Image 1 (cartoon, rainbow, N blue to C red):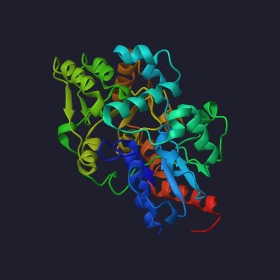
Image 2 (image 1 turned 90 degrees about the horizontal axis):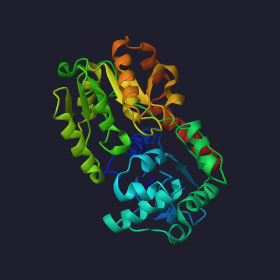
Image 3 (image 1 turned 90 degrees about the vertical axis):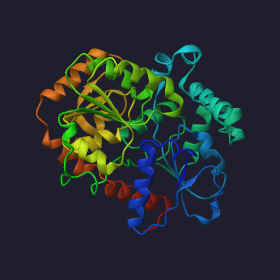
Length: 359
């Protein structure tokens, strides 16, 4: 598994997806190594390569000019709404004039200039973002999106679409289960778990709930490039007593908070799924999620939906979820469909199909 260079210094949902997929594949007796794209890797010693995040094609391109088959967990997100309508300053004015691919290309160049995250592929540098994704899709042995809707989104912008298998995002049942004790300090709280950044939309969530009597607890670290946004959130929250912040904590402690809470909300500008929504849902929270992304395929009518750019929509969805009884069918559905054991089994089936062997 070849992964972005900052997978562990700036962890996100893909970090959990990669680590858990590897863990449960190893339980199926596969030898799985996780390597950063900046590591020195002996490609020839592997039967199969597995990449993640096709929206970072420059990470993938240097490794595909050989005969070793590869698959891609696409994690094909679309942050166009956020980049065009919610970026402030010069970046916002520039992005409003660009296509999605052009925006991602500019961001890659900015990471190179600002953070020293060098452009790794001459093809990416000269041909741009969209053509680089098209090249990867054309050469991939199989694509592994988290949903059928994600595949459809990728297909809509890519000329050469390849074969695919849906591989679900999931929860770890050994951690997120009903046997844990609840943390009474968070009884009936509204939770929002995830990195604090503009795309996750915590600021609008605070605006939506700051005038209510609901206790909102935001759990997560600020993204390194979103510190100004984090300070905005903290400054606004300081004007009221019902908004609380908790730094990133272990899953073992987080599960106790989930069990005590009533609602979990991710009013993001885009979510392929939202791992924390799955985790909260299996622990007995009603969940509020964005309408933008792939959430409806995962949760159907068992979630409450909001529009991220509409503060009234967020407030109404949260209050509705808070006042309704917890839906026990949600936890049952998650346990039946979204576990890392199922993810590993689906991934293994894809590997077997690519290699035409029974592993």
